[in-house]
Length: 79
Image (cartoon, rainbow, N blue to C red; front, side):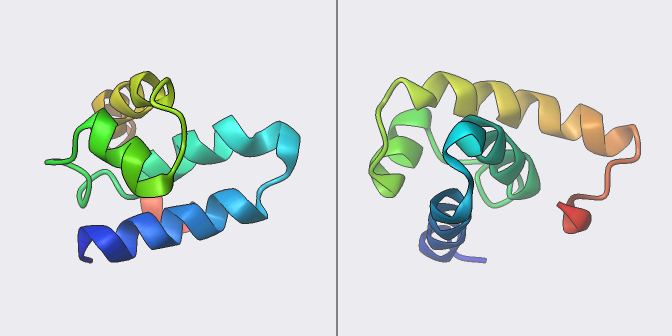
């Protein structure tokens, strides 16, 4: 999946998320799409979604934890 398509998919999921579930949805989406986001920086991610750069830290955390979750058996296709 191209990065623009991935970001569009993440943006759509964020728009549909409840207001109090925005950050949780952001976390799930980064984990779900971690393969496509491997070469994306936090700054590029935030700019691509039009969100505050402070979310770059959350993005980086989720990118780091995704491989461990998958290794432990998480099926990202079910997210």
